[in-house]
Length: 89
Image (cartoon, rainbow, N blue to C red):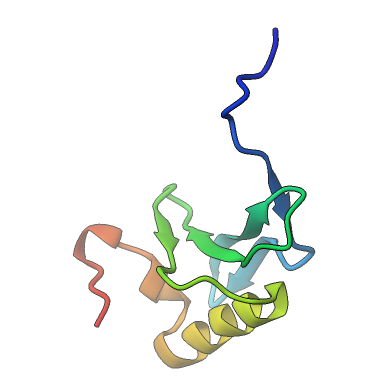
């Protein structure tokens, strides 16, 4: 089966993967369109499959990962849970 030409392929950063803190596991996705030098998207998926995606893009994958760590430090990993009541200020 041929892949649709408009289906975007992504390059994932080495910083992507599982992250566990305070007994909570999330999946970090740091990615950009494959074959480009574009900016990186940061996405965190919780154990229930809810996704948090940053509006801002990052010049480097390291900057995206550092923003994730800063968010954990500031708000705690549990801030990614209960997306139905999660508010971004």
